[in-house]
Length: 423
Ligand code: AMP
Ligand code: GLY
Image 1 (cartoon, rainbow, N blue to C red):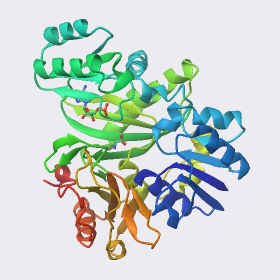
Image 2 (cartoon, rainbow, N blue to C red):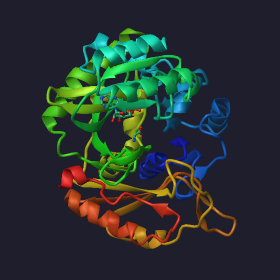
Image 3 (cartoon, rainbow, N blue to C red):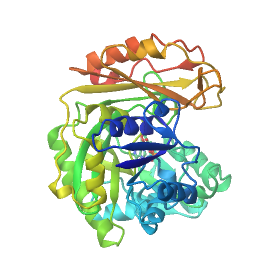
Protein backbone atom coordinates (compact mmCIF):
# COMPACT_ATOMS: atom_id res chain seq x y z
CA UNK A 1 0.00 0.00 0.00
CA UNK A 2 1.06 3.55 -0.73
CA UNK A 3 0.63 5.87 2.25
CA UNK A 4 0.92 9.64 2.71
CA UNK A 5 1.38 10.95 6.27
CA UNK A 6 0.53 14.64 6.77
CA UNK A 7 2.54 16.63 9.32
CA UNK A 8 6.16 17.06 10.36
CA UNK A 9 6.55 16.70 14.13
CA UNK A 10 7.48 13.99 16.59
CA UNK A 11 3.99 12.49 16.38
CA UNK A 12 4.32 12.10 12.61
CA UNK A 13 7.81 10.60 12.97
CA UNK A 14 6.34 7.98 15.33
CA UNK A 15 3.46 7.28 12.92
CA UNK A 16 5.89 6.95 9.97
CA UNK A 17 8.18 4.72 12.05
CA UNK A 18 5.26 2.40 12.92
CA UNK A 19 3.87 2.39 9.36
CA UNK A 20 7.32 1.70 7.88
CA UNK A 21 7.38 -1.57 9.86
CA UNK A 22 4.19 -2.82 8.20
CA UNK A 23 4.60 -5.67 5.70
CA UNK A 24 1.63 -4.14 3.82
CA UNK A 25 3.52 -0.91 3.08
CA UNK A 26 5.07 -0.44 -0.36
CA UNK A 27 5.76 3.31 -0.36
CA UNK A 28 5.64 5.99 2.34
CA UNK A 29 5.49 9.75 1.76
CA UNK A 30 5.32 12.48 4.37
CA UNK A 31 4.35 16.13 3.86
CA UNK A 32 6.28 18.09 4.95
CA UNK A 33 8.16 15.68 7.29
CA UNK A 34 11.51 16.42 8.96
CA UNK A 35 15.09 15.11 8.94
CA UNK A 36 14.24 12.04 11.04
CA UNK A 37 11.16 11.19 9.01
CA UNK A 38 13.33 11.38 5.89
CA UNK A 39 15.09 8.21 7.10
CA UNK A 40 11.87 6.16 6.75
CA UNK A 41 9.75 8.12 4.24
CA UNK A 42 10.11 10.34 1.19
CA UNK A 43 9.48 13.89 2.43
CA UNK A 44 7.48 16.21 0.19
CA UNK A 45 7.66 20.01 0.46
CA UNK A 46 3.91 20.59 0.87
CA UNK A 47 2.56 22.35 3.94
CA UNK A 48 0.25 20.26 6.17
CA UNK A 49 -2.40 22.96 5.70
CA UNK A 50 -2.30 23.18 1.88
CA UNK A 51 -5.39 21.01 1.35
CA UNK A 52 -5.63 21.25 -2.44
CA UNK A 53 -1.91 20.55 -2.95
CA UNK A 54 -2.07 17.52 -0.62
CA UNK A 55 -5.10 16.07 -2.45
CA UNK A 56 -3.52 16.69 -5.87
CA UNK A 57 -0.30 15.00 -4.73
CA UNK A 58 -2.18 12.00 -3.29
CA UNK A 59 -4.21 11.59 -6.51
CA UNK A 60 -1.11 11.93 -8.68
CA UNK A 61 0.83 9.34 -6.68
CA UNK A 62 -2.07 6.84 -6.40
CA UNK A 63 -2.03 6.99 -2.59
CA UNK A 64 -4.10 4.25 -0.92
CA UNK A 65 -4.29 5.92 2.49
CA UNK A 66 -3.75 9.48 3.76
CA UNK A 67 -2.94 9.61 7.51
CA UNK A 68 -3.39 13.03 9.10
CA UNK A 69 -1.29 13.94 12.16
CA UNK A 70 -2.24 17.50 13.26
CA UNK A 71 -5.68 19.03 13.81
CA UNK A 72 -5.36 22.06 11.51
CA UNK A 73 -5.77 20.18 8.19
CA UNK A 74 -8.72 18.26 9.68
CA UNK A 75 -10.56 21.41 10.73
CA UNK A 76 -9.77 22.79 7.25
CA UNK A 77 -11.54 19.78 5.70
CA UNK A 78 -8.71 17.55 4.44
CA UNK A 79 -10.70 14.38 5.15
CA UNK A 80 -13.70 15.79 3.25
CA UNK A 81 -11.51 16.85 0.31
CA UNK A 82 -9.97 13.35 0.21
CA UNK A 83 -13.41 11.74 0.24
CA UNK A 84 -14.55 14.00 -2.61
CA UNK A 85 -11.48 12.94 -4.60
CA UNK A 86 -12.04 9.24 -3.91
CA UNK A 87 -9.08 8.97 -1.52
CA UNK A 88 -9.11 7.05 1.76
CA UNK A 89 -8.21 9.28 4.69
CA UNK A 90 -7.57 8.43 8.34
CA UNK A 91 -8.96 11.38 10.30
CA UNK A 92 -12.37 12.97 10.94
CA UNK A 93 -14.42 15.18 8.62
CA UNK A 94 -14.43 18.93 9.34
CA UNK A 95 -17.89 18.50 10.89
CA UNK A 96 -16.59 15.82 13.31
CA UNK A 97 -13.34 17.77 13.93
CA UNK A 98 -15.48 20.46 15.60
CA UNK A 99 -14.95 18.35 18.74
CA UNK A 100 -11.54 20.05 18.84
CA UNK A 101 -12.29 23.27 16.97
CA UNK A 102 -15.12 24.51 19.20
CA UNK A 103 -15.22 24.15 22.97
CA UNK A 104 -18.95 25.03 23.05
CA UNK A 105 -19.74 22.29 20.55
CA UNK A 106 -17.80 19.77 22.65
CA UNK A 107 -19.68 20.75 25.80
CA UNK A 108 -23.04 20.45 24.02
CA UNK A 109 -22.17 17.02 22.64
CA UNK A 110 -20.87 15.83 26.03
CA UNK A 111 -24.04 17.02 27.77
CA UNK A 112 -26.29 15.40 25.15
CA UNK A 113 -24.33 12.15 25.51
CA UNK A 114 -24.49 12.29 29.32
CA UNK A 115 -20.67 12.27 29.50
CA UNK A 116 -19.34 13.62 32.83
CA UNK A 117 -17.59 16.97 32.35
CA UNK A 118 -17.07 20.25 34.25
CA UNK A 119 -20.14 22.49 34.69
CA UNK A 120 -19.92 25.34 32.16
CA UNK A 121 -21.48 28.42 30.59
CA UNK A 122 -20.70 30.34 27.39
CA UNK A 123 -20.54 34.13 27.09
CA UNK A 124 -20.24 36.52 24.16
CA UNK A 125 -20.46 39.52 26.48
CA UNK A 126 -17.52 40.42 28.74
CA UNK A 127 -19.67 42.02 31.46
CA UNK A 128 -21.84 38.92 31.73
CA UNK A 129 -18.70 36.74 31.87
CA UNK A 130 -17.35 38.87 34.73
CA UNK A 131 -20.69 38.52 36.52
CA UNK A 132 -20.45 34.73 36.31
CA UNK A 133 -16.90 34.80 37.73
CA UNK A 134 -18.05 36.93 40.68
CA UNK A 135 -20.99 34.62 41.31
CA UNK A 136 -19.03 31.33 41.14
CA UNK A 137 -15.75 32.46 42.75
CA UNK A 138 -12.28 30.93 42.27
CA UNK A 139 -10.65 28.65 41.35
CA UNK A 140 -12.32 28.87 37.96
CA UNK A 141 -11.35 28.13 34.35
CA UNK A 142 -11.67 30.61 31.45
CA UNK A 143 -11.30 29.39 27.83
CA UNK A 144 -11.32 31.15 24.47
CA UNK A 145 -14.02 29.29 22.52
CA UNK A 146 -12.12 28.78 19.25
CA UNK A 147 -8.75 27.26 18.33
CA UNK A 148 -5.97 29.13 20.15
CA UNK A 149 -2.98 26.80 19.58
CA UNK A 150 -3.45 25.25 23.03
CA UNK A 151 -2.90 28.64 24.68
CA UNK A 152 -6.47 29.86 25.15
CA UNK A 153 -7.06 28.31 28.59
CA UNK A 154 -6.53 30.06 31.92
CA UNK A 155 -6.91 28.04 35.13
CA UNK A 156 -7.41 31.00 37.47
CA UNK A 157 -6.60 30.68 41.18
CA UNK A 158 -8.29 34.02 41.95
CA UNK A 159 -11.26 35.95 40.51
CA UNK A 160 -8.86 38.80 39.61
CA UNK A 161 -6.85 36.40 37.46
CA UNK A 162 -10.06 35.14 35.81
CA UNK A 163 -11.21 38.70 35.08
CA UNK A 164 -7.81 39.54 33.60
CA UNK A 165 -8.27 36.54 31.30
CA UNK A 166 -11.63 37.94 30.15
CA UNK A 167 -9.93 41.25 29.30
CA UNK A 168 -7.12 39.50 27.39
CA UNK A 169 -9.32 37.06 25.49
CA UNK A 170 -12.49 39.08 24.79
CA UNK A 171 -11.37 42.72 24.82
CA UNK A 172 -7.72 42.64 23.73
CA UNK A 173 -8.30 39.57 21.52
CA UNK A 174 -4.88 38.11 22.26
CA UNK A 175 -6.00 34.91 20.49
CA UNK A 176 -7.78 36.79 17.68
CA UNK A 177 -11.23 35.64 16.57
CA UNK A 178 -11.04 32.62 18.93
CA UNK A 179 -11.89 35.12 21.71
CA UNK A 180 -15.26 36.24 20.33
CA UNK A 181 -16.82 34.02 22.96
CA UNK A 182 -15.54 32.36 26.13
CA UNK A 183 -16.45 29.25 28.06
CA UNK A 184 -16.28 29.54 31.85
CA UNK A 185 -15.92 26.22 33.65
CA UNK A 186 -15.84 24.64 37.05
CA UNK A 187 -12.23 23.83 38.00
CA UNK A 188 -11.65 20.07 38.13
CA UNK A 189 -9.12 18.68 40.59
CA UNK A 190 -7.25 15.40 40.18
CA UNK A 191 -4.71 13.63 38.00
CA UNK A 192 -4.76 14.51 34.30
CA UNK A 193 -4.64 11.65 31.77
CA UNK A 194 -4.63 11.58 27.97
CA UNK A 195 -6.81 8.74 26.70
CA UNK A 196 -7.02 7.62 23.08
CA UNK A 197 -9.66 5.64 21.21
CA UNK A 198 -9.56 4.42 17.63
CA UNK A 199 -12.98 5.13 16.06
CA UNK A 200 -14.67 4.05 12.83
CA UNK A 201 -17.82 6.17 13.18
CA UNK A 202 -19.68 3.49 15.12
CA UNK A 203 -17.21 1.36 17.06
CA UNK A 204 -14.40 2.52 19.35
CA UNK A 205 -11.36 0.53 20.50
CA UNK A 206 -9.15 1.73 23.37
CA UNK A 207 -5.66 2.75 22.19
CA UNK A 208 -4.47 3.25 25.72
CA UNK A 209 -3.55 6.13 27.96
CA UNK A 210 -0.53 8.31 28.59
CA UNK A 211 0.42 11.14 30.86
CA UNK A 212 1.78 14.32 29.30
CA UNK A 213 3.88 17.02 31.03
CA UNK A 214 2.54 20.34 29.79
CA UNK A 215 4.55 22.80 31.89
CA UNK A 216 8.01 23.76 30.71
CA UNK A 217 9.78 23.39 34.08
CA UNK A 218 10.58 20.57 36.51
CA UNK A 219 7.89 19.93 39.12
CA UNK A 220 5.22 21.13 36.65
CA UNK A 221 6.19 24.80 36.92
CA UNK A 222 6.45 27.59 34.35
CA UNK A 223 4.60 28.19 31.10
CA UNK A 224 2.36 25.73 29.27
CA UNK A 225 3.89 24.01 26.25
CA UNK A 226 2.75 21.52 23.62
CA UNK A 227 4.12 18.80 25.94
CA UNK A 228 7.62 18.24 27.35
CA UNK A 229 7.42 14.48 27.84
CA UNK A 230 5.08 11.56 28.29
CA UNK A 231 4.87 8.03 29.60
CA UNK A 232 2.56 5.09 29.18
CA UNK A 233 0.79 3.36 30.81
CA UNK A 234 0.00 5.75 33.69
CA UNK A 235 -0.36 3.56 36.82
CA UNK A 236 -3.30 5.68 38.07
CA UNK A 237 -5.33 4.68 35.00
CA UNK A 238 -6.56 1.20 35.87
CA UNK A 239 -8.43 -1.26 33.64
CA UNK A 240 -11.64 -0.37 35.54
CA UNK A 241 -11.15 3.35 34.85
CA UNK A 242 -10.58 2.62 31.15
CA UNK A 243 -13.84 0.65 31.05
CA UNK A 244 -15.62 3.54 32.79
CA UNK A 245 -14.26 6.05 30.21
CA UNK A 246 -15.20 3.82 27.24
CA UNK A 247 -18.74 3.25 28.63
CA UNK A 248 -19.55 6.76 29.87
CA UNK A 249 -17.56 9.10 27.63
CA UNK A 250 -16.20 7.60 24.39
CA UNK A 251 -19.06 5.34 23.23
CA UNK A 252 -21.91 7.74 24.14
CA UNK A 253 -20.10 10.63 22.39
CA UNK A 254 -19.48 8.49 19.31
CA UNK A 255 -23.21 7.61 19.22
CA UNK A 256 -24.16 11.29 19.68
CA UNK A 257 -21.87 12.36 16.81
CA UNK A 258 -23.42 9.73 14.52
CA UNK A 259 -26.90 10.88 15.57
CA UNK A 260 -25.92 14.44 14.56
CA UNK A 261 -24.88 13.22 11.11
CA UNK A 262 -21.17 13.76 11.83
CA UNK A 263 -19.83 10.25 12.61
CA UNK A 264 -16.32 10.39 14.05
CA UNK A 265 -13.59 8.42 12.28
CA UNK A 266 -10.00 8.65 13.45
CA UNK A 267 -8.36 8.99 16.85
CA UNK A 268 -10.49 10.53 19.55
CA UNK A 269 -8.20 11.96 22.23
CA UNK A 270 -9.99 12.61 25.52
CA UNK A 271 -8.21 14.86 27.99
CA UNK A 272 -9.46 13.51 31.33
CA UNK A 273 -9.28 14.57 34.94
CA UNK A 274 -9.43 11.61 37.33
CA UNK A 275 -11.43 13.33 40.08
CA UNK A 276 -12.65 11.96 43.41
CA UNK A 277 -16.02 11.43 41.63
CA UNK A 278 -14.41 9.46 38.79
CA UNK A 279 -13.06 10.40 35.36
CA UNK A 280 -14.39 13.65 33.86
CA UNK A 281 -13.84 14.99 30.37
CA UNK A 282 -11.74 18.18 30.11
CA UNK A 283 -11.62 18.38 26.34
CA UNK A 284 -11.43 16.39 23.14
CA UNK A 285 -8.79 16.49 20.45
CA UNK A 286 -9.44 14.84 17.11
CA UNK A 287 -5.96 13.36 16.56
CA UNK A 288 -3.11 11.68 18.38
CA UNK A 289 -1.38 13.74 21.08
CA UNK A 290 2.19 14.83 20.65
CA UNK A 291 4.22 13.49 22.56
CA UNK A 292 1.67 10.86 23.67
CA UNK A 293 1.60 9.24 20.21
CA UNK A 294 5.30 8.41 20.41
CA UNK A 295 4.96 6.34 23.61
CA UNK A 296 1.78 4.63 22.36
CA UNK A 297 3.50 3.61 19.11
CA UNK A 298 6.37 2.09 21.10
CA UNK A 299 3.89 -0.07 23.03
CA UNK A 300 1.68 -1.10 20.09
CA UNK A 301 2.31 -4.71 19.07
CA UNK A 302 -0.26 -4.87 16.25
CA UNK A 303 0.51 -3.65 12.75
CA UNK A 304 -0.66 0.00 12.68
CA UNK A 305 -1.57 0.08 8.99
CA UNK A 306 -4.46 -2.44 8.99
CA UNK A 307 -5.77 -0.85 12.22
CA UNK A 308 -6.00 2.57 10.54
CA UNK A 309 -7.59 0.98 7.46
CA UNK A 310 -10.19 -0.81 9.59
CA UNK A 311 -11.09 2.54 11.18
CA UNK A 312 -11.52 4.09 7.70
CA UNK A 313 -13.59 1.14 6.47
CA UNK A 314 -15.94 0.90 9.48
CA UNK A 315 -14.54 -2.53 10.40
CA UNK A 316 -13.24 -2.02 13.93
CA UNK A 317 -15.94 -4.26 15.42
CA UNK A 318 -14.01 -7.21 13.97
CA UNK A 319 -10.59 -5.85 14.89
CA UNK A 320 -8.30 -6.64 17.78
CA UNK A 321 -5.40 -4.46 18.99
CA UNK A 322 -2.48 -6.02 20.83
CA UNK A 323 -0.05 -4.26 23.16
CA UNK A 324 3.46 -5.01 24.43
CA UNK A 325 3.58 -5.56 28.18
CA UNK A 326 6.17 -2.84 28.62
CA UNK A 327 6.50 0.75 29.75
CA UNK A 328 7.50 3.63 27.50
CA UNK A 329 8.75 7.12 28.23
CA UNK A 330 9.62 10.06 26.04
CA UNK A 331 11.70 13.11 26.97
CA UNK A 332 11.30 16.17 24.72
CA UNK A 333 14.45 18.16 23.90
CA UNK A 334 13.42 21.74 23.13
CA UNK A 335 15.30 24.82 21.94
CA UNK A 336 16.37 27.17 24.77
CA UNK A 337 13.69 29.85 25.13
CA UNK A 338 10.75 27.57 24.18
CA UNK A 339 7.77 28.10 24.59
CA UNK A 340 8.83 31.74 24.15
CA UNK A 341 11.12 32.86 21.32
CA UNK A 342 14.12 30.69 20.51
CA UNK A 343 16.98 30.51 18.02
CA UNK A 344 16.88 28.26 14.95
CA UNK A 345 19.68 26.70 12.96
CA UNK A 346 22.06 25.44 15.67
CA UNK A 347 23.77 22.11 15.05
CA UNK A 348 22.84 18.96 17.00
CA UNK A 349 25.48 16.26 17.59
CA UNK A 350 25.57 12.95 19.41
CA UNK A 351 22.30 11.58 18.05
CA UNK A 352 23.86 8.37 16.78
CA UNK A 353 25.32 7.50 20.19
CA UNK A 354 22.01 8.34 21.88
CA UNK A 355 20.11 6.05 19.50
CA UNK A 356 22.38 3.11 20.37
CA UNK A 357 21.39 2.98 24.05
CA UNK A 358 19.42 -0.32 24.41
CA UNK A 359 15.65 0.25 24.30
CA UNK A 360 15.98 3.81 22.94
CA UNK A 361 14.22 5.24 19.91
CA UNK A 362 14.89 8.81 18.77
CA UNK A 363 12.01 10.75 17.21
CA UNK A 364 12.63 14.05 15.43
CA UNK A 365 10.19 16.94 15.88
CA UNK A 366 11.79 20.12 14.53
CA UNK A 367 14.92 19.18 12.58
CA UNK A 368 16.37 19.59 9.10
CA UNK A 369 19.62 18.74 7.28
CA UNK A 370 21.95 21.57 6.36
CA UNK A 371 23.54 21.42 2.89
CA UNK A 372 26.69 19.90 4.41
CA UNK A 373 24.58 17.14 5.98
CA UNK A 374 24.70 18.47 9.54
CA UNK A 375 21.52 18.10 11.61
CA UNK A 376 20.07 21.45 12.68
CA UNK A 377 17.22 22.56 14.94
CA UNK A 378 14.28 24.22 13.18
CA UNK A 379 11.53 24.28 15.82
CA UNK A 380 10.65 24.77 19.49
CA UNK A 381 10.28 21.10 20.30
CA UNK A 382 13.21 19.59 18.42
CA UNK A 383 13.72 15.94 19.44
CA UNK A 384 11.99 13.25 21.47
CA UNK A 385 14.19 10.68 23.16
CA UNK A 386 12.00 7.66 23.83
CA UNK A 387 12.73 4.39 25.57
CA UNK A 388 10.97 1.22 26.60
CA UNK A 389 11.62 -0.93 29.64
CA UNK A 390 10.16 -3.70 31.78
CA UNK A 391 9.37 -1.00 34.34
CA UNK A 392 8.82 2.73 34.01
CA UNK A 393 12.02 3.29 35.99
CA UNK A 394 13.97 1.19 33.47
CA UNK A 395 12.47 3.17 30.58
CA UNK A 396 13.28 6.43 32.33
CA UNK A 397 16.90 5.45 33.03
CA UNK A 398 17.46 4.44 29.39
CA UNK A 399 15.85 7.62 28.03
CA UNK A 400 17.96 9.92 30.22
CA UNK A 401 21.14 7.90 29.53
CA UNK A 402 20.53 8.68 25.84
CA UNK A 403 19.68 12.32 26.57
CA UNK A 404 23.06 12.68 28.30
CA UNK A 405 24.87 11.52 25.14
CA UNK A 406 23.41 14.39 23.09
CA UNK A 407 25.72 17.27 22.30
CA UNK A 408 23.46 20.26 21.75
CA UNK A 409 24.14 23.33 23.91
CA UNK A 410 21.13 25.05 22.29
CA UNK A 411 18.69 22.58 23.82
CA UNK A 412 17.17 21.73 27.19
CA UNK A 413 14.78 19.17 28.65
CA UNK A 414 12.86 18.47 31.83
CA UNK A 415 14.75 16.08 34.10
CA UNK A 416 11.68 14.75 35.91
CA UNK A 417 9.46 13.11 33.29
CA UNK A 418 7.35 10.45 35.03
CA UNK A 419 7.78 11.91 38.51
CA UNK A 420 4.15 11.45 39.50
CA UNK A 421 4.35 7.73 38.82
CA UNK A 422 7.89 7.27 40.17
CA UNK A 423 7.66 8.99 43.56
P1 AMP B 1 -6.68 22.73 26.81
O1 AMP B 1 -5.96 23.85 26.08
O2 AMP B 1 -8.13 22.72 26.62
O3 AMP B 1 -5.93 21.44 26.61
O4 AMP B 1 -6.48 23.03 28.37
C1 AMP B 1 -5.21 23.25 28.87
C2 AMP B 1 -5.11 22.71 30.26
O5 AMP B 1 -5.94 23.44 31.15
C3 AMP B 1 -5.60 21.28 30.42
O6 AMP B 1 -4.63 20.38 30.03
C4 AMP B 1 -5.89 21.24 31.92
O7 AMP B 1 -4.68 21.03 32.62
C5 AMP B 1 -6.39 22.61 32.20
N1 AMP B 1 -7.86 22.64 32.28
C6 AMP B 1 -8.73 22.83 31.27
N2 AMP B 1 -10.00 22.79 31.72
C7 AMP B 1 -9.95 22.55 33.04
C8 AMP B 1 -10.93 22.40 34.09
N3 AMP B 1 -12.24 22.50 33.86
N4 AMP B 1 -10.47 22.17 35.35
C9 AMP B 1 -9.15 22.10 35.61
N5 AMP B 1 -8.19 22.22 34.68
C10 AMP B 1 -8.57 22.45 33.41
N1 GLY C 1 0.21 16.66 24.14
C1 GLY C 1 -1.01 17.34 24.03
C2 GLY C 1 -1.49 17.55 22.67
O1 GLY C 1 -1.02 16.96 21.72
O2 GLY C 1 -2.42 18.32 22.50
